[in-house]
Amino acid sequence: MVELKPVNLNSTKVETLIVPVCEDREIHTNKTVIGLEKSAKYYPEFKGKSGDRITLFKPEGTRITRVIFMGLGKNDDKLNAESFALFPAEQRDFSSIQGLLV
Image (tube, rainbow, N blue to C red; front, side):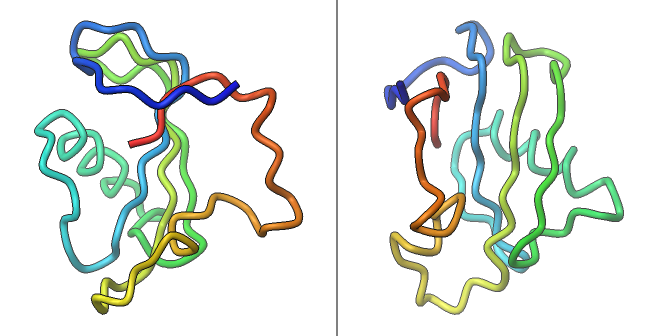
């Protein structure tokens, strides 16, 4: 079951955090998420381009088991709900995922 709720990312245990990332613009305001995003963009294979994906495990200073970053591409102010989709519509079955979506 996917559960969406506000939490303190520095002190709350989170199994999986999924973070959408734009290639050319910061879209988050949470300092922890911004720091995690910078950590992901450190790796040359992840820049936030559409289709980019990277997973970081047990980020320092948090109680998060894994963070999955999903590249959205350039933010052309046309982002919509479909832009934040993790998988094509026909492959969306989140019944087995436990975590938090930011």
